[in-house]
Image (cartoon, rainbow, N blue to C red; front, side, top):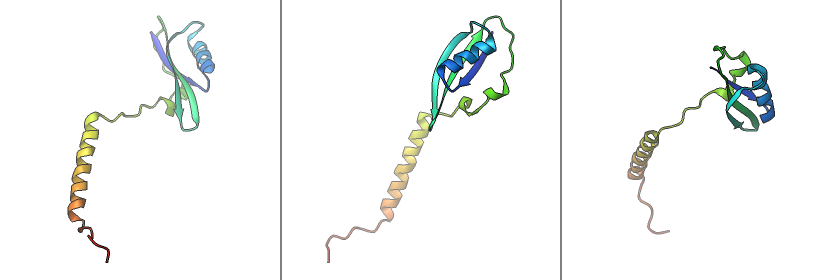
Length: 102
């Protein structure tokens, strides 16, 4: 099975590009809209039964296909603990607030 990730500016464009690369009736596994700031692109994961593996074209490997790491829950807990420790240290070093205006 040949699987490729195809990107284009429009949903129709991504489906047409998939047909161009894989033939008349590719198997569309997913179609997603990706937005990065003002730039919007569509991404489709498509496959063709029985086809040998072919490397994707050079223009496919753009920044829309890069995986961004998702922080894990323990990263948030560690950050929360560090912030609590820092807050405690800053509070301990702060001079007492004045009790009267004068």
